[in-house]
Length: 253
Image 1 (cartoon, rainbow, N blue to C red):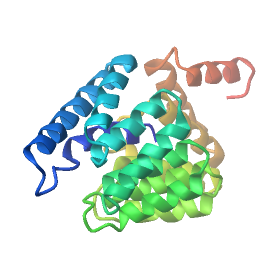
Image 2 (cartoon, rainbow, N blue to C red):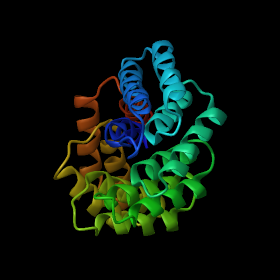
Image 3 (cartoon, rainbow, N blue to C red):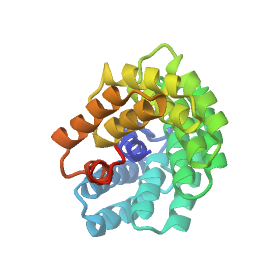
């Protein structure tokens, strides 16, 4: 889910043109609002939330009916941990552009991160079937992650299967399928999806640790030891390497 916010930030650049028939003064205010929200996004990316808030609050004053401005405010106030205010802005953005899949995704991510996984899942699925959305595999994957976070592994697998069969190779969907398969005790399937993931992406310590756990569950100690060596060689300071070292010293590996 960590990638969703970055995608939402980028999506703001494509949201909302001024409505036809606006007066020149209104158009100028709309342009200023879009400039300020873009500046606010850049300050957010650089970690300067105080200046980001100043820019986005100005944008809200200039044109509160711009969905991109409202979504920028949602992202900002979520960063500031003012989640009630953040949720209000995300929902205002969606009311302004109810068919915008980028806003649907952003609201889904917010709901999933803030204790409402079923509502977040529903919003991701709405985005996935939106004909304006070009990457449904991403929305299906996000729905799967949200269901997994909510403890519904069966539904998570259902969404992730849609993602991996969407016709586009999306590595994150394969990795999430490997994780869900492992948690459901389907270790051969977990191995297969993890191998597919590693054939197109490099694995971090957490990914290699999953490989270790899968191979241990399958009883292949040679393969498990290979994953363990890769963790300890490539990521010696990681929490996963420390866990493996403790297991080894305690006779658990």
